Every structure is written in C-alpha cells, then in structure tokens.
Length: 439
Image 1 (tube, rainbow, N blue to C red):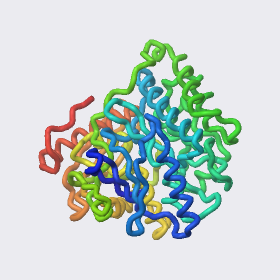
Image 2: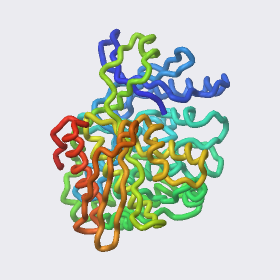
Image 3: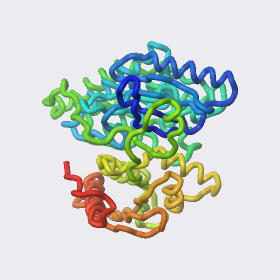
Image 4: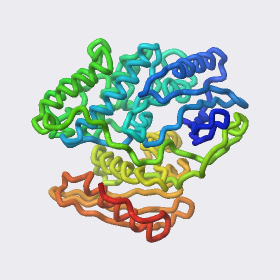
C-alpha cells in the first residue's frame, strides 16, 4: 500500500510514522478531493484505539500521511486457539471495536480491516491504522468499485453496492474468526470461487476450524458474517460483547481473568524501509535507521503431486510468519503482499501456481531471502521441510526438516522447523544470534 518510514519531527521533537502511498489517488480532481476529504476526516478522529493521523500532505505529486509512531507489531498472523488465550483475543477485539465504532459514528469507514492494519503497542493496546486509504490505493474507479482484501470483502460489495459501516463489521467478523482458529472462514483459492462462496455459501463452521471453541460462539460468528447487512450486529461493540459471553460458556474459559489485557509485544513496530526519502526531507522530517533484512515466506507444496490443502498450507505459513516477525533483525513480507504479487504475476502467466513463481514473488517483494518448503502428510504422520534461498543468487543457504508427533500439531511442527532454520541462519551469520527463545 505504501512505504512507511520511522521519522523524526524536529519541530515537535517526537518520532512519527511517515507513509508515502505507493499508488497515488486518481488524477481526477473529484476523486483526489474525495480522498483528501476522507483522509482528513480520519485525521480528526481522536481515540486511544485509532492510530492518530497528524498530517495529510501532498508533495511533488505524492501523497504523504504522517501518523503517530507506535512501538510494537501488527496483529497479522497471530492466533488465539486455546481457551486460556481467549481473554487476550477478546481484549484485543474490544479495543478494535471501540476504535471502529468511534470512526463509524464520525462517518469514517475503514474498507480494509485486517490483521496487518491493526497495531499492538507496547502496553498491549490495539490501534487501527489506514482508515479509508485502501479505497484510493487499490482502485482508480469511482462508484461502487470493489476495494479491499478479497477474502473479507462483504457480500453486498461483491453485488456492486457501496461499502458502509456494516461492511466493516463483516471484515471484523472475519478477523475474529482468524484470531480464534488460525484459519479463514472462506477457503476458495481464486477470485470467482471466493465471490461465490462469500455471497452464496455458508462459512466454514467455527468449531470445525477449532474444536476447542464452544458451540455458542458459532452463533455469534454466524451473525457477524451474515450475508444480509441488516442481519449483522448493530455495532462492533455489540459483536464483541456477545462473543465474550459465548466464550465464557466454555468451562476452561470461565476460570480466566476476562479483565486482563494482552501482554506487551516485543516486536519492532512499523516496517522501516529505506527506499527514497525525498519527500521526508522536503517536509523537514529526518528518517531514522536502516532497513531491516527482508524475508519472503511463500507456498508450501504438498509432498504428493497434484494434491492440495489450502488450509494446512496457510496454517504452516502463518506460524512461520508469526515466528520470524518476532525477530527485530528481520522484516517479513506480509501474506497479503505475497498474494497481491502472485495475482499480478498470474495475469501474465495464467494457471501458474505459487510454487512455480516463488523466486519471482520474492524478488518483486524486495526480499533478500526466500523461505519455501514441502508438506509430507500420511496420517497419522506429518513432516515439514523447508529451504532458505538467497534471492539474488538463487543459492540455497539452509535446509531443515521437522517431524510431527501428531499430524494435528501443525503449528508446533512449523515452529520447530522455524527454530531449526533460524539456528542455521545464525551460524551462517545471516542473522545476529542467539536464536529466538521458544515462548
């Protein structure tokens, strides 16, 4: 969506985040005016769960959004599958709901609510960022053009209707589902099938994705993901309240402290990318630090030729992203960015699989390293293998394999694999040591 710099504002003597939009709003003056109006409306939002927009500027034909700097990481790739982690999930969702409802009451729609647009600060507080930006970054069309991340675009938007607060609530339901299961509610792998699934088919049952969840939570999620906007919750807050009560119905969840806040996050904050700093200099803002090394984690192939398991692949990749994202010396390319590049490349070569384009995807993302691998599954056994490749030279730097004690222990096995790979990366001096501790 854009390049984000950690910067210093010498006038107010504080750190700020400076986002230079990668794709500029349409050159059409009406569209540009609409973008600036909405961005400035977001800037007027004042809430502890919304990343504060300090300025919206234009310089040399570029649009620059200056926001508060938030030490922490994003919500992307994290899951709260076990009952003792549900209070943490609800606390985060409650924060997001408070920020979202405040924005909606001010007439501001997010349009692309997802984990990578939720920042978790050092105190464990969730803050929503990038209100309204995706409409103008992802589309130059006016009217009811589809805007957002495909697997969370609401049914009414697929039918050509304008997004409204209820569309955000649908995306919020998808986010809650992902947090509690580590999986997606809609599993189609191409746009046409995804459109049909979201508009006409029921979502994957919650308890099927995570059997530890109480059946009461299914009713709540189903209401959040209702096909008709009028059938959804009236507000984000109402949804989270209902979900919290449903999760409390599980005996192990009732014993937890529901007032707890999520633990402080130790990741590195917004991605700092060193590309061009012309706009920053022109605005009197000095950039700080250098870009961290970038890692692209792509598709894991099934060991049996022709076989496919989209959900299993996603669980493995998400766990690896979560693990390596905790490393301050690395910048991990988001799964959404990987998907965007894949869709662009597939237009040039229809029918090509992610695995066949892995190196090109990594190169397009600006990654220094590519991590991809293979899933060997023959119940009750499962094993994961992966190689780390230097993108510039196509040279394999590391290879590792991890076997599962139980075929269902996907995340545990993926973490074992990640730990083995990182130890090799440290020994190769590709990364500073020591290896990350196991939580």
